[in-house]
Length: 191
Image (cartoon, rainbow, N blue to C red; front, side, top):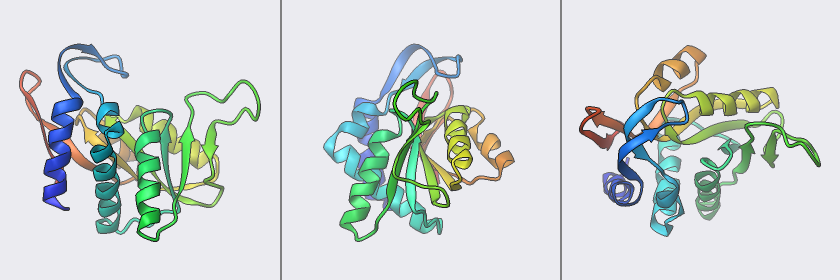
C-alpha cells in the first residue's frame, strides 16, 4: 500500500470524520466515538485517495471484480469514485447499490445499478462494526446471482465483522481499523 496516500487519507478522516462524544451506532451499541465517513468520502482529495487505495488493495489481494457496490448511501460515494478512477486507469467496473428494503414503486428492485447476474463483485463498506450492513449487501448481491469476491471496509471498528466474514468465507480487507481503547480510540493502518 502507498503509505503516503494512507497518511493523507488518515489526516482527512481525523479532520472531517472522526468525532468524540456520546453516540448510538447502527448496530444499536453505544460508543464514545463516531466515524462518519461521508465528509471524507465527499471531499475531492478524499474521494480520489479512497478510490486509489481501494484499487491498490484489490490488486495486492489478487481480487479482480467486474463491479463494486454496497449498501445505500454509505457505499455510493466510494463505489462511484472507484469506478471513475478505474476507468481513468483503463479498467471498466460496474457499480451497484443495495437497498435495505426493495423499492415500493417502479421496478421494486432491491439492487440498483448495472451489475448483473454472473458478475464477480466486491462489496464496499464505509465503516464496519459488526458487519451486519455489509453482510446484507453480500446477501442481496448473492441473491441477484452475483459472486462476492471480498468485502472492503474503509474503517473497521473491530467489533465482530472480522469473525462474521471469516465464518461466511468472504475475505474482509480494510484500509484502517480502530485501535487503542474505547476511552482513547485511534485510527491506525489495517495492515
